[in-house]
Image (cartoon, rainbow over all chains, first blue to last red):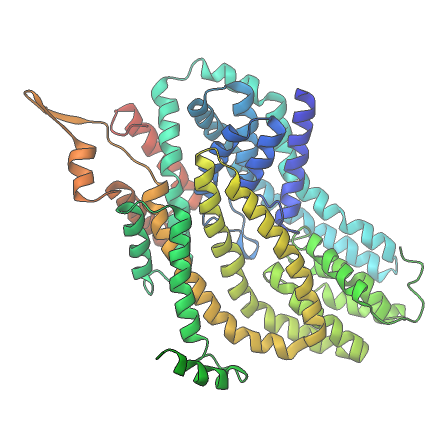
Length: 265
Length: 272
C-alpha cells in the first residue's frame, strides 16, 4: 500500500506540471493538488488543511509570461506526503509540511529554469528534423519537452518519497518546540507575501475603495469569503454594465439607449 | 492516425478540435527562453497544416514560420491560432507574412488581458475560497475549482473554433470589450484581496501586562480595540512596500518572514 501511494504521488508530481502548463484542469494549485494527494494518502481533511495553508501562501504568485515562481504545488505534495507519513497530529503535520515543503518549492524555481534552458535544444532538434523532411521524427522530439518538465517535479518528489519521512522523523526528535511553533506562525503569516505580490499587479491606487470595503466587511463583520466574492461581483457587475456602453462597440449602441430608459421605472 | 495525410480533403471541424487539443496540451511544455511557445504552436498545428499544404516545401516554410517567437496567455492563443489556420487555408503559403504579423501584433494585447484574468484573478478568487475552506479540512472549494477548470477546458476548445470561423475581425473587436471586463474583474479581485488580509493572515501576541492583580492582554484588550486585524494590515503594508522597492527578491522576502516568525516564537512575542 505504501509503495503504491508513493508511486501515485510521484506520478501526480509528474502530471501536475504538464497540466499547469497545458490543459489547466488539475493545475498545480495547492488546493486541487492537495485534495488529490489527500485521496491518495487516505486522509483528505489533514491534506486539505496543509493544502489550504499553502494555497493561501501561493495566492498572487503567478507564473506570468514564462517567469519562474516558487512551486507551491510541489511544496504541497511533498509536504502532505511526508507529514501524513510522519504524524497523525494535525497542527504538527502543518509544521512538518511547511518545513519540508517550502525549501522543496523554492528548489522548484531552479529546476524550472533548468527545464526551460534544456528545451532550447528540443526546439532546435525539432526544427532541424522538420527541415530534413523527417516529420514523424519532429513529432517525437517534441515529446522530450513534457518529459523534461515532468522530471523537474517528479525527481525532487521521488527523493522526498524515498527519504523524506525517515529524515524528518530523525530531525523532529532534536527540534525544540519554539521552532515547530515558529514554523506554524510563519505558515499563518506567509499568505501576506502572496497578497502583497498580487497588489503589485493590480490597480490598487485606482480601486483602493474596494480593498478597504473588503477589509472592513471581513474584519469587522466577519462575512465569509464567498459572501465577499459575491459582494465584489456586485460592484464589478455594476461597473461592467455602466462602462460597456461607452466601449467602442458598433452593435451595442442602440441597445444602450433603450436600456437607459428602463432605469427610471 | 496519419495515412490519409496526402489525400485532397479540406480541414474539418474534427481537425480543428484536434489542433486545439494538441496545442493546449503542449502549450508551455516545450517552453524555452528562445522562441518560448513557438515549438508548441508547431506541434499543435502540424497535423492540420499538413492538410492545408500538400507540397513538402510549403509545409516546411509554414512550420518554420510558426517556430518563431510566440508567447501569450495560452487560453487566448486558441483564438489567434484558430484565425491563423483560417488565413493559411484561404491564401496558402502567401499568407505567411500576414500570419506572422497578426500573431505578433495580437499576442501582446491578448496576454495583457488574458494574464490578468486567467493567472491573477481566477486563481485568486478560487484559490482564496478553496484555500480558506481547505484550512477547515473541507475540499468543497477545491472540487468546485476543478469542475470550473473542466468547463473552461471545453470553452477553450470552442475558442479555437471561434477563432477559425470568425477570424480577425472578431478578435480585434473583442479587445476593447475585454478591457472593460478586466477592469470589472480587478474590482472584484481587490474586494476579495481586501477581505483576505484579516481572514487569512493571522498574528496573535500572547503577552499580558500585569500590574498587581490586574492583567491586561495586549491582543484582545489593546490591539483588537484599536482595529481588528491591525497586525496583519501593518504586515501587508510593510511587505507590499518591500516588494515594490525591488531591493529584495520574493524568495528573500519569504525567508525574511519565516525568520521573523522563528525569532518572535523564540521570545514568545507571537503565539500559535
